Length: 425
Image 1 (tube, rainbow, N blue to C red):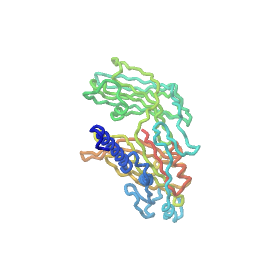
Image 2 (image 1 turned 60 degrees about the vertical axis):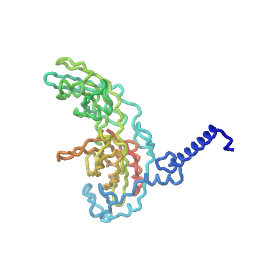
Image 3 (image 1 turned 90 degrees about the vertical axis):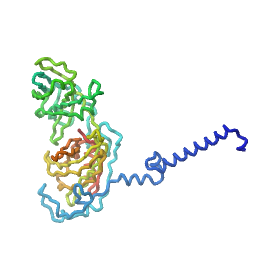
């Protein structure tokens, strides 16, 4: 029968068979290959993915840079709290050996605002409405072309209340000066947000005024700038709140490009600008695990890994990341720790664990300050410099995710509770 067909009919049949075989090969490849789109749905792949994403169990007493290394309990010091306890507490490792892992359920696809989690009704939530819509900042700029001096005067805030839904404000103003380098193909216009962040030149800060409505600063800052380079600078004024937990929270900002300012000879150009909502920078996330041993009164913090960190080396598209941890009480540091440096990766995996001596009576009062840094190697033999990527805080008095994880840890002793946290600027 095949012999009775003409040439074109034969070619059509052969072509159809070839297309069918190609489709079958593609489907098989998608199912078998781990990178294929159908691989997660094949038999047995789900368990494999769960094993890869599972947080490894960290043994009691492991130290920074040496995960899962079992050490004698006698090496641990309790001098930070000076709490008298039976000798058996420091040597009891039975709590740690049977630890389970609790993973906080979160929707990581949400990048705006606080992500949903299994938090308790007591968890504080961020206000959905920008409460400083009517607040304004008065400031002045004057440039002396003879001496090359830029004078920045922060005057006052108006329509600004020191009382907000979550307590009293302690306002101050940060003045940041960004220098945008000139490139051959650069078009005139306002620089982008990422361009500003990567070119911070100098930063100043006004005094902190506690619980003051419409605070008056009247502070002057002077910067030396060449007359031919003044148009390449941008000023950003950040209105911040400083609270008892040593956090610096941006509540509003104003951005002015000096290329758009009409400079007058020896005359200050006055501004009265309305505060704009602070921009939410995508600096990445950190996966943190917490566990508390009530018998030994030990609190462990594991920096598991980070994801999507801000690129600090633009040419390589990477960052050399180190994470510093501080246990805080009443705004004071009681103990510090840091991870090893993870070079050339914006998705580093640390698995570094530190244990802290925390009496049960202080568990609801202490909190963690976690700082994510990029460490730059010095070629001249000097000490390596570090650049801040961002910070995050864990404790009962912070955002919904931090509150939920801390509450889950307190309600489930001897179990490791993991949660993703967004890095804040």
